[in-house]
Image 1: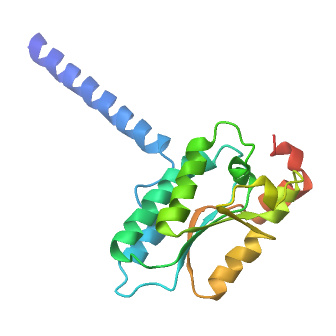
Image 2: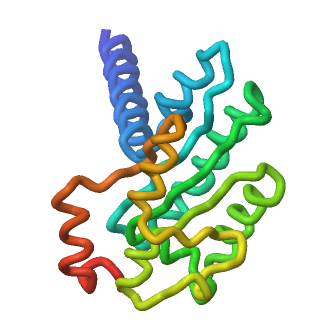
Image 3: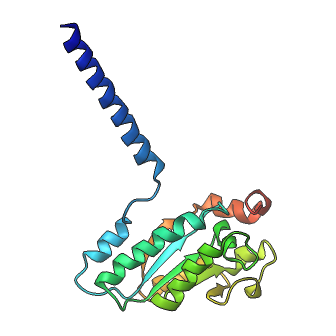
Length: 187
């Protein structure tokens, strides 16, 4: 009887460990395998007018995390709609990883350059946010389009019928904080 109880207790403990590990894995991953908007796009019968990925954070280190996810989403879309126009607008603190002088970002730059060259994706940064660090078009690689305003660029895409795939977006207060207290976010 003791042996049966020991086996049951051991089995129960093993199940708890597996359960905790599974929950930890689920909460550690902040990005799904497929964005819900991409699922909706892939369910369409007709090619959309265009697709724009929206990235806007207060984290200067966020873009290297999001870029591979965006690339994967683009590849999923290209499988069904190989000729659809695609753009990426990055218009928060994360965009500074794309500046020429960003240290340790060669892999990120290569990924975005490859998307531009091989997949004909347009990559935009926000001039208003860049201005917070006194940066201009010359401070970004040639594969990056420098838009006066990331929000205006995004709205231009929406106006011509592009479907927005939000990766991360700031709320109004966070956006206000970025512009009123940039030193808190632009280290």
